[in-house]
Length: 223
Image 1: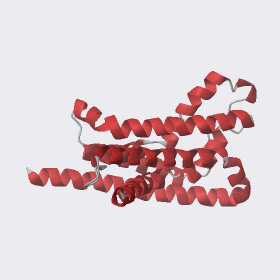
Image 2 (image 1 turned 90 degrees about the horizontal axis):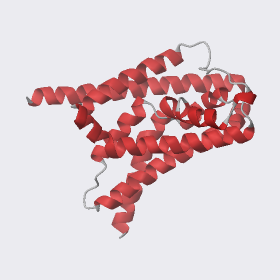
Image 3 (image 1 turned 135 degrees about the horizontal axis):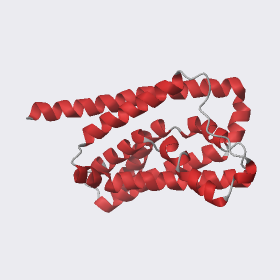
């Protein structure tokens, strides 16, 4: 029983360690704040909750059905990693060289209807700003390799879902208190954090790209 509990916790931490660096909830908080700056506090809080739920559902979908979707289209996981890595590199490079923090189209407060908030909570706030190609490729990878030796499969899957839920909770808390974080950091601190986030994201994109290229090379050498 103790062994299973230890393996459960290790799986949860493994999922968090794999997803949190690339999702980077604190780094996305300023972007969330800039996109919802004209919304009321109640609307912004509701958006933070919806973004977290949508992110969780996207990650769960990628983990449990991602491999089947790839098989249906005849795609391999290394190819997805290469494509996802290239997109992450391109996005992070653009952010790193941008003079300003990315901002979306300003929406007047009077236009923040329930329908608009629901749409924004999925696109672009949940996808691709929170859960992008890098996060989805990681979720698919986790779904293909989340099995823990000598541990019942259902327990491994539950541990993985708990890890995804904790990652979504981190997204919610970061977005929910984005205004507080920005006030604490100030303009200079926010800019510095954005640059650091962009650079870390660039490194993660290169790593994902390299993992994909390595996988393709291994497949090519095995032939």
